[in-house]
Image 1 (cartoon, helix red, strand yellow):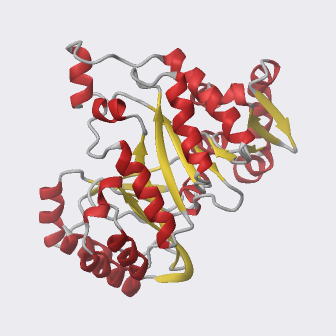
Image 2 (cartoon, rainbow, N blue to C red):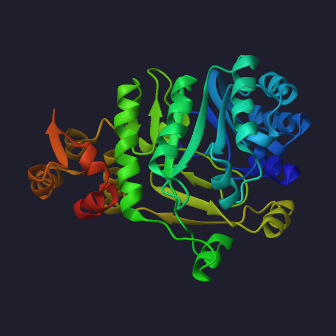
Length: 344
């Protein structure tokens, strides 16, 4: 897999007109914390050959709590990793078992202390809410634990049951409880209140950061910037064309060995580009910029968006401020539906 990744980086053609300066790198979409230091160094070497990586680039690594120890943290820093994203999910033991997580609540607490002690001052912790076993008291305890530890960045996601997964099958067989949408909404509403009181910016629907600690990499997605993706299932985007690699590991490796990147692509129409901007911008605290819509797509679309947003404004789910459509806290509960309603 490492050899294939390196080869894909080498044979990737740069997007026309793009300055080959990389400001963020993200190792994710799997369990990259299983990689050895040598594996990571080989990938970095390949990236340095192909691109100019900024000296202050944000370089993130997803890690599971049970993979984190003092030795690995030191090695990652030497590799150039300067930000971690840790999938803790919960500090409730029973819930971790229910979600089939490999780590324990004790390991979660220990890894946070080790990260802090190692000198990492830029890291994120993931929590999941809305599972059948998570009552409101335990949810508050999970959030309070992170706030008390002054975690710089917190991502919180509602539990979703994906089709064809082990969890979906167990729920269908009535061996596990299903999720409760009302409970999820209530826990999300409480979360927004707690995080605001603790001084965190709710800068994107699922993401909260202390001032200056936003994820630069994820922010680039929401701002529609270009990006390269390497590896199975990885996506790339040049502003108009989206490419995605096949997901099968063996087929990916075989194709790359023949110097063929096994990908499909689609060219977004102007309408699709506008709809993507509506969807991503509404998720952020800065909101949808109507002036940008006018400049990029035409004044008529600005007017239509204001007209379509009027009913959401009157329902206190949307505000218009400085030529921007911004979701209220209540509106964030309906973000996907509001975005879909505004689509062209």
